[in-house]
Image 1 (cartoon, rainbow, N blue to C red):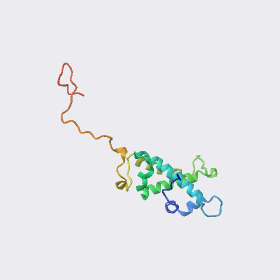
Image 2: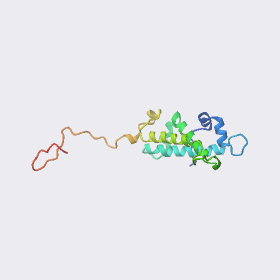
Image 3: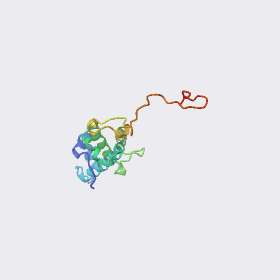
Image 4: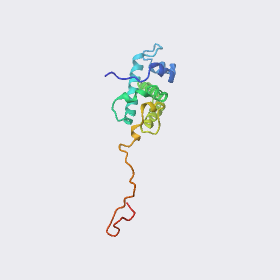
Length: 162
């Protein structure tokens, strides 16, 4: 199965800017971003985002995520993950502290996706996608009508304590 791309090159340009895309993905120095590099980083960023979000769904396929492809926060997150991946490709871009360009934005994108996967935040398309299964109990049980107290020899009807 071919790797998936949940965002387009144009969405990447719209989110981070055309100049940024050219700087990050121009591998041969001709002033034009190389499509193969963009595709590879988008595929890797998509896989990373899916890996984070699939934990929120009981099915192990990406089909559950198809309804969120148009969500602006999902698009932004995948774009910044792709930029972080692109910034790490060249050692000469390493900063003094050992990090690479767009690390902070990539970490924020990852944190956003993790919050959504944990049920702490929601996508706008979740009404279509359905409830986050991590926040739903496996079995719904009704509460007992009368409290049940543990009996003992001294208190055959229970002490009122569990």
